[in-house]
Image 1 (cartoon, protein in one colour):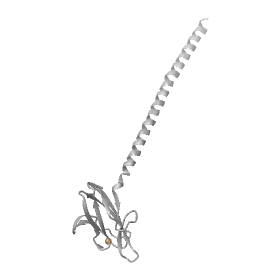
Image 2: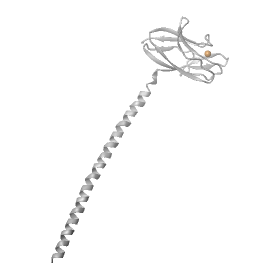
Image 3: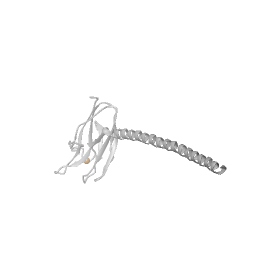
Image 4: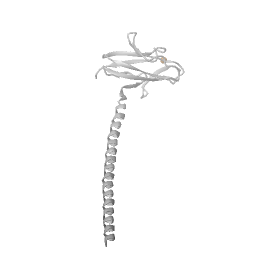
Length: 164
Ligand SMILES: [Cu+2]
């Protein structure tokens, strides 16, 4: 009579213990799941912030392309990104411009920004097949000129600095 009674108690306690184990392990699974869920949402927010960073990189709008170009008659010109020849540069005062020069010709060139024969800024000499860039700050409004150090008569143009 006594023996089966003890066995029943053991069985019941075993069932209770295993149920407790299941109950305690189950919510912890839920917790870790919700933690992972919140992690993935935080990753999504960092993704969107990196997208806005790449938009900031596109703020490269102050870049000016001034490439050296050789015409069929062997003379040289400055050429901008839209294939304008010796283009007039319209700049806004107080703005920094990154002037990029690519030189695919067989001669060296050097862009000089000046006024009345005075050099204000310039790239260094760009050898054949090389490229360079320099920052030009259009700090005050007015009319300037640019030319090539080596071809001042054919590679030249106007720089107009005005807020319009
Ligand atoms: Cu030149």
